[in-house]
Image (cartoon, rainbow, N blue to C red; front, side, top):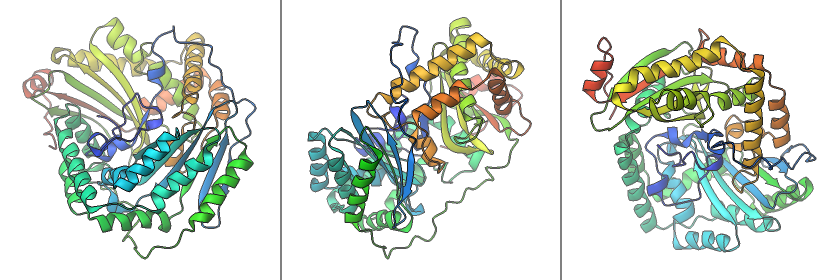
Length: 490
């Protein structure tokens, strides 16, 4: 299932805008997806010449404007592109219909489409993504075009001139895309895991029908009001990373924000904080879900664990642990389940800002033939048990840290990776980490740190962990004859 419909190959959970048919999703879960570094570690032949180039960069600077706008600035020397993200807190009325808002911001009228095209002609790339309660409108540009880039984003937010015809078209496209997700073979298992953790029909676990109903309840005027409310009722958060100096960045943003002259909007949302059906901070939830799906050709196995949050002292060690275990060709999961035992077709790992117990969502996913379900689960748990039992060897620790740092350097050389790890940090309402800060923290991680984090994630009595298996009914009954089946939500 894609995220924002952002796939694991997209950097920073971002996607260059495409119509809602591609971007819409039936559940907030995809919109919370933040990729691992797996996709950068395909083999040892990958270039090792890329080095971090901002060793001398000044520390990030945080400022606050008189109107409450919060701004984080990063200087990225030796880069050739600048990047900016506008993070908008969304009114709860938009929950379930954010795909519609994203479509309108980029495709809501001929005038809007022309604005986006004009920016693209100037080599300014626009991206848009969302979580259940925040929208990120982003842009990247060559050095020297920062003022045009900032003006362009503000204009998209400040003067939305959407048409009723485009609103109707985008509503139908969003609903169609949502309904199509029902046929995604991964979706029933994902939604069942979400239901088990949060309860059904909640902000994190909306069904396709929930989202369709929410879109049907919208009107053009309502969405306009909700957007304006999001901008004026709570402070904006802006993140900029650029090779230009922090002083220049500050001057540019302040100038454009002062010209915007944000004014209070009379529309008041009834509430700004979303309620969650179940107590997501209640620890110790462990279980196995068997989800019948008689249409799939391969079994799906997902394990969701309570992981470390960005900002916690153990977060760098968690990043190294994920590099050791991860679904890439050199990771322990792939090596055991695919290379050694030939049980699965592939393994992937994901982490997001969804709450699981007192931590955050960490998921391992795989596909296998129906007759290999029990041994695949056995191998998966054997890998985690090995991480629980002993720390990594000095050689494995050093190799994994080097792989992570290489992936980090590769990532920050790209247009969409020039702002480092902004989404997970900003979703946690933390300032972003500079590349140098994260490099230094990872270099300091010890084998004992990794071992402690593995025990915390996979062995703590307080942990939250769910294993979900999706396969045909007869297969599940044969593989787990003494266990009940959980009927899929759909």
